[in-house]
Length: 70
View 1 (cartoon, rainbow, N blue to C red):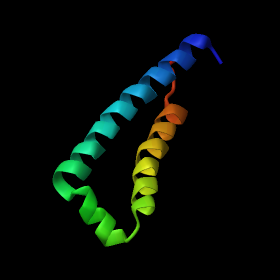
View 2: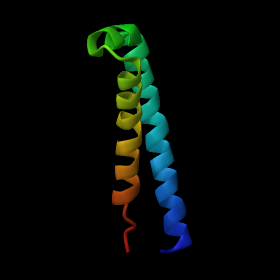
View 3: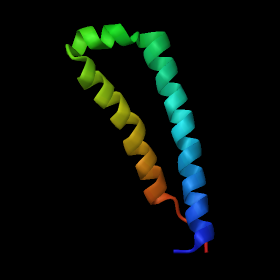
């Protein structure tokens, strides 16, 4: 794998990670209220793990599917 391609994939993934993380923070803290989610699911750790997976999994998908035009 070309070093330039790898840097570009990491850059796109990092940008996606930051934007997605900010969106989820605004949604969870501003709209849904974190405590409401904890009350609904009944477990603080379950909500934390779900939110982390909602950030990490799409970021990994963007990294994996970012392609360089030849």
